[in-house]
Image 1 (cartoon, one colour):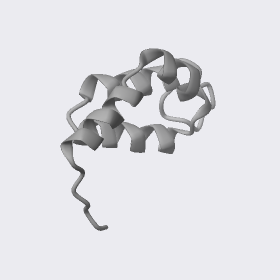
Image 2 (cartoon, one colour; image 1 turned 45 degrees about the vertical axis):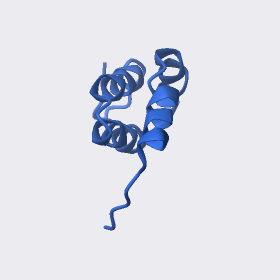
Image 3 (cartoon, rainbow, N blue to C red; image 1 turned 90 degrees about the horizontal axis):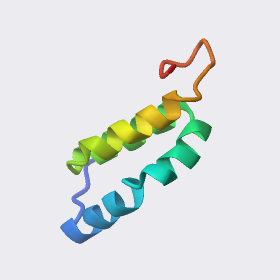
Image 4 (tube, rainbow, N blue to C red; image 1 turned 135 degrees about the vertical axis):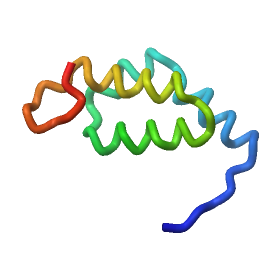
Length: 72
């Protein structure tokens, strides 16, 4: 796996967009567990732990498949 540096303004804009709880609530339930895990990992990497948990919680609220690991 390669690493790439992300400049601070780009990281801040990323967090601004993905930290919106209403966006997470609308989109999170429609994402797969893998997609949410990877988005949460990126958010945590730029210091947005609360936003990461918001996405996981929004996804889990409607994750009813027995095979999925983010069940409410």
